[in-house]
Length: 507
Ligand code: HEM
Image (cartoon, rainbow, N blue to C red; front, side):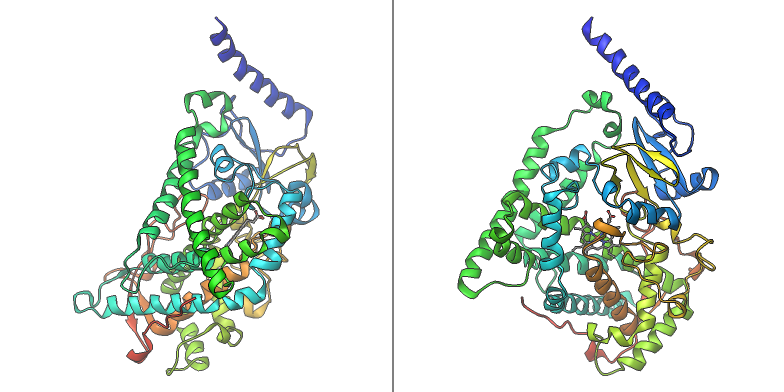
């Protein structure tokens, strides 16, 4: 008798709560929400496109109900400024799904931490220590090693007599750079040897990453309808096993670093930095492990995605590709390869990277923020506990603030200097305010370096029989936005063959 009563009364209570909120507050307009499920069944898989469409109908600030949770989406530069500058502190918490809560030990890391003393402390470690300009520079040889290894690998594949004229899967090469760069930076480990064979620890690392994705995805629907959760119980045991496996691997790596440090002093990798700073900042082991894995989660896919979209645009727009190559030839020439010290003399290349991040931000809705108090945005009420998303994809294509927004035209940034690290609210691929991406400069350097090398070393064309305009520019659904159809392209070398060698660097 009691169970059916509970089953009926929970949804009724939630419904009453939803109705109460709507009557009590002046919430932003939006598509009609159904009882219990809200708009969950109306949201199309590529969410940022769907939200942009709804904004076209209801205005630049909309309410979208994920079950009984209010999600507010803003899609104009003025409202983004309200969210990320004027009300930044009140909107700096995070919504943690059940899996995010498990993975982060309830926000002991940075990405999933609410705004508060723990967050401020860990963020300080990131700003002052991990991502300081000095450390970024010290880790540069890793990035240059990895991009030159990529060039060598593409050269080998495209000059292989079996492959002449055949197209290559671009993402494969970019993914390897992103993977090696981030594992070396965070863990001080290149899990892959010169022949491309992954060691045992690397295989374990990969298995943990893919198991984490699987566990996260398995909960998706029941996340938003609390009273349905009993039907989708959290697999406590699977999460515990996953956490233990992740901790075991990380601890083993930390142990190796501790021994090496005693012998030959501290290195620049994040794991060494965090172990050295443990006492100074009073960092728990959970926080150190959480931070290291945050870097993997946030820094791996994002850079590879940005470079893949940029390459697609460069193949669709041969004029831009050629202009970037002319700049590289003029500045770098034909007798050496590009390095990051060339960046300041390569404004067009930098504009190409920026234009790609404008049209194709890898996290088009950033990461959702959560309100820790009641706020007003655009004249509407945002009750405490609502999630707020900024549709940076839509803002970067808004004809009210961009001329010919859909055109891939890097020149726009030579004509007008537009900041992309959180100071200009028209261009926010890294977010802005307190939670702005701490890895922004690192991400920009890596993307620009990958593009510079790809363009200096090769001419890129569509696969035989495909016209540039036929490249599929649609997106995969998900929090990060890969191309739906992975880019295939033909690479033709354009420099003397002795310049296609990896420049290895042990560190
Ligand atoms: C092109 C590359 C990248 C893009 C476009 C990007 C974008 C973003 C965005 C939009 C956010 C959310 C900001 C917010 O919540 O308001 C974020 C957060 C974050 N990113 Fe990046 N990111 C990139 C590369 C990286 C790299 C390379 C790292 C580290 C190695 C990194 C580490 C982080 C961390 C730790 C956070 C969480 C910050 C917080 O919650 O306070 N990102 N990033």
